Amino acid sequence: MPLVRIDIKKHQDPTHAKRVGQLIYAAMRSTIGVPENDNFQILNEHDEQHFIFDPGYLGIPRSDGLIVIQITLSEGRTVEQKKLLYKTIAESLESELAVRLEDVFINLVEVKKENWSFGHGIAQYAL
Image 1 (spheres, helix red, strand yellow):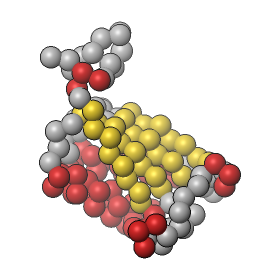
Image 2 (cartoon, one colour):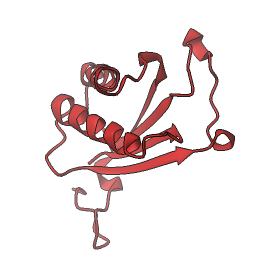
Image 3 (cartoon, helix red, strand yellow):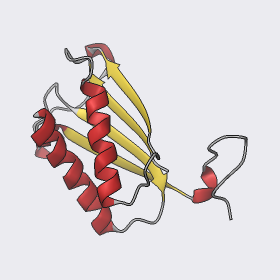
Image 4 (cartoon, one colour):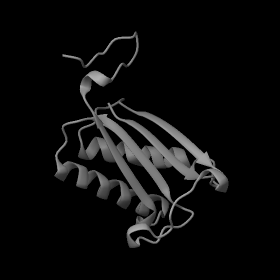
């Protein structure tokens, strides 16, 4: 069960953030085995005062089109799966929405399965 947080600078197209989320969900389905309907996303658009980043950290030239993606998910994916996820997300955003590869920032947060409750106050994945 991934929980995806997407943060962008306020965009002129009001559907942009949702479209980004759709591409990320498709990438997770195809690369890390996320099941159908397991789609939980928080989409945030920020003004300039509330979206701060270094435009050149690690020698990567970032623009105001930066997309920050944080995915919290249960631990257990291989490094190869994670690399494929990063690549698939970045390339799909580039090809479908003309997002520069340099502007795709992804952070995975892995947690143990017992750290999820999907409702009813129950830890559905706890062993």
